[in-house]
Image (cartoon, rainbow, N blue to C red; front, side, top):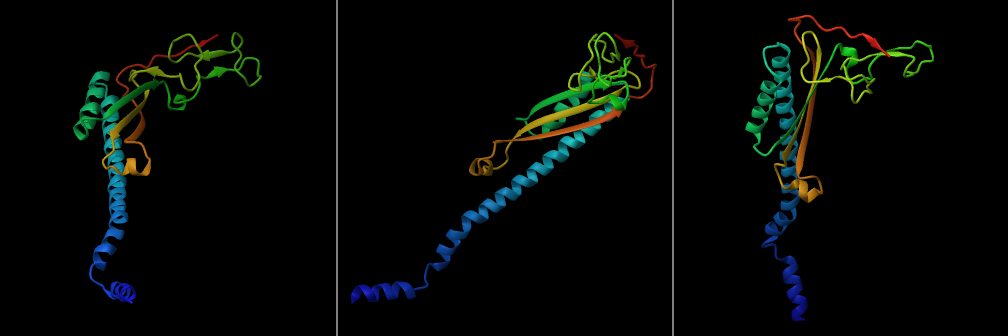
Length: 196
């Protein structure tokens, strides 16, 4: 009988219930808070990178900054935010907006709808004597007067909370931002001839 009485007394005793309930709620509460902080950090990273790229593009298009000046500006802004950031900058220039991210244009001499080497001529915008695909078209760098500049920055930051490891996510946050702007017409733009 003493065992039954002990079990009844244990069942009816309410002392310490709060500690047990708090223990059950603590882990989910901490996870929710860390995920919220992590999400806020990701949003803030995106805003910082986007603002930096926009300002860098403005500096690049006025014509009085070198490519190295623009790169240094971007790196200084993002490294001030996180000293462990890994920053990759891509700059390509094109003669017109419609050339960004597409193969170099060509004249379809035989009207077959497909570029035929030796028959159709192409506009070699980057002067490498090859008709380039979308991935390789454009000239590396900021270009010249009145050129269109595609400017892209990828920044990899360490995660701000340990939630990444707990959830099986990567330990880094990757943010990419791109913009396309036209340089100021401070000089004459070079013309491209059709090449076979």
